[in-house]
Image (tube, rainbow, N blue to C red; front, side, top):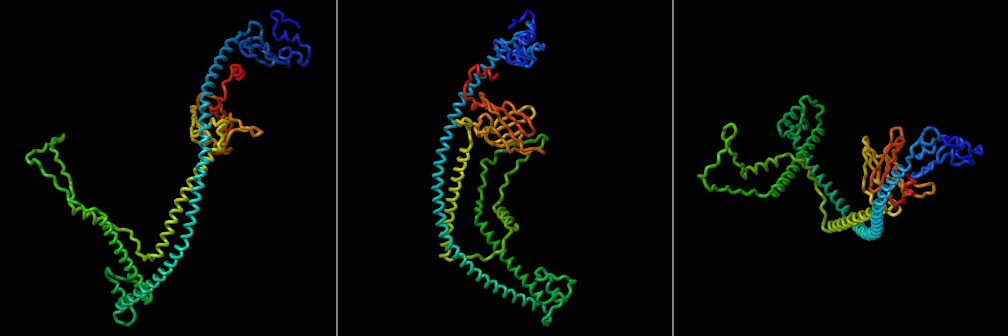
Length: 483
């Protein structure tokens, strides 16, 4: 092969070495237009680039081998030193993160063992409580039938007695209304005139309110009797309410403690002069004497409270059960109370089991290393938005949900990639899809979101560093290759 002549451009020198038109005989050189050129870059890292970049006046290789001699400064040693320093920092971060990851793994596995133990224990307690609940339900159901039958019989008896009582009361009211009507019929002709009704209906105790312009033809005897009966019923109802109100007042008075008269403190030294106080305006300030209400004043206050209007429901007769029926009811109510308590305890135990099982369904990593982040949230302020991620829960942008936990990314074969978290089903975009977030998980010495962006509409991308992702401390040459 021809050697490079002194001062000969690199491109011209390699072109003289071409033996094939396809460049296959000169791989890694710029001898052919459609070939490649390899920079050795001693002290840094080699670089393969297109042959068109040779002798283009741009120093692409740090050793300057792609241009004329002396045209480019050799910066490979300096770049190599920078890369070595960067690799050193990365290794240190990996070492710190790896040690922390070991602690995460220990905590995660211990938590997993406790959950497995809790599921067995809680499931046993739940099954025991289910048995107690079923047994108490059986007792309750057995007691319900007799109690229900006895109550229905008592109610039927009560309804019959009430119907009879109402019938008697209605007859009393009818007779009372007829007596009043006969009092209206002053001329005893069996009929009433407008004047007779108006005369009888004057005064505060009037039983009928009759308009002076009322047509006499509208005052039929059945109408007047019905109106009188309704008025009598209302008076009886008001009397019942007054009776109930008085009962409540007596009960309220009985609950109030008796007011004891406070002894008046004796004056020790009457001759002792009180200190005089003077205001800024030069006027003497009079001391206010402490006001102590007399016992009678408290009684007046009580009377004021009692005189306040109260909403008193109409008194109705209630069913009273005989001793045998009441005993059946008490037995059923006690059985029902015990059943409800057992049911409540069982449902609580059932929820506990479900919560632990649901937690166990979450994939916290191959070695449970991500468990420590559960319940934690991490934020990043980029000057415009506040991004937030709560692992295994959701991601937000200024409070807007941009994705709920979906799971880890999987390849086409279903293999889990613990380097990418997926969040989906976030808030809907206007004329767009529901928001979603893809989180790239990288090794770091602490948990932090290092970047957040929206590469596509309503699709967000985070880079999250965590010790949980530090599976090993790389060798320097491995870091160099990545750099």
